[in-house]
Image (cartoon, rainbow, N blue to C red):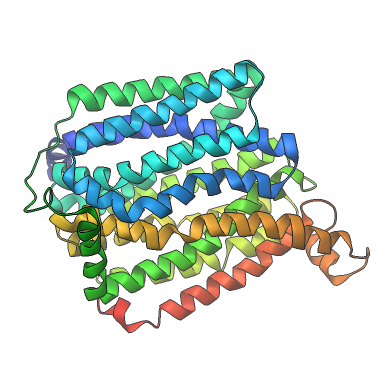
Length: 432
């Protein structure tokens, strides 16, 4: 009975956040479906891991380059107006893509350009959204935010390949884009008319020069060495993870025993896994050591999935790898999010988060490019030149996709090395 009362009380206190979370997550489903469909379209059109990876490079490049200034702008601007404007611009890129597609004029370079615009909008929106969440959510629920984020992301991961594949097969790419626009409309109208985000005056924020405001975020991280080293840790992890992301569709779509359905199956399993992990993370009590949880979760992830993807030959083994690699990630994320929200003052969050984004995420476009390049230019040619009885063929198989499997084997050791290196960092442990 007490638990039910606590649950009802929590829902009432989190009401504004939950409405925002639900509608934005629904819009995220539409965006994810479009991105998923475009990855398949790109790889089927060109058969190149690098050209497909450049879709993500073009999204993240402006995000990384301009993030350091975005937080300073976010601290000056109205959070709700910023989020609405960025959402509207992102929806406009989907409309342009749809028009080009229906006219038979869509080219890969169009997608690169549109993704750059989307990335720029996300750069400004993300710090505004983080501060908005801080304002509408009581502090005692901060740990649940990370779990709910992964809950939505994992649910979208489950539904995206299933719904996108079905819609693509029945109605084509145009229907996927139309659904994306519908979900945008729901989220936009809800935010505009149903969500109130409190406004707060920032002492001097509106009078500061842009570079000076951004510089305060950098200065904060120079003082807070533990936060800075934690960001570098995640930057190194993101490099390994983005190499993985670039190689993953190339292997799944071209490997013997793979294909679009297998890609969708493994993605769905990963979604189910993060879904389960996010539920556990949302209801777990705060640990005694958040840093220890972060380090252990990442080490477990890095030392399992990549090996199974590299050495496995069947969808079952690849799905098992997805499960082991992602089950602990929501727990890591909730504790990372809690550390940031509890350690960084609210009036600095926009600026600090934007500097964090530049530092923590600059490795993502690098990793995507590196992953696509290594698959196409290094590892696939190496495997193509192997004789039938060689050790590498025995380990990773033969044919297209075996080079990507070889790359997964290499990045498994890279991920383990990153975790072991940063878990010895004294500055990170001082966050305790």
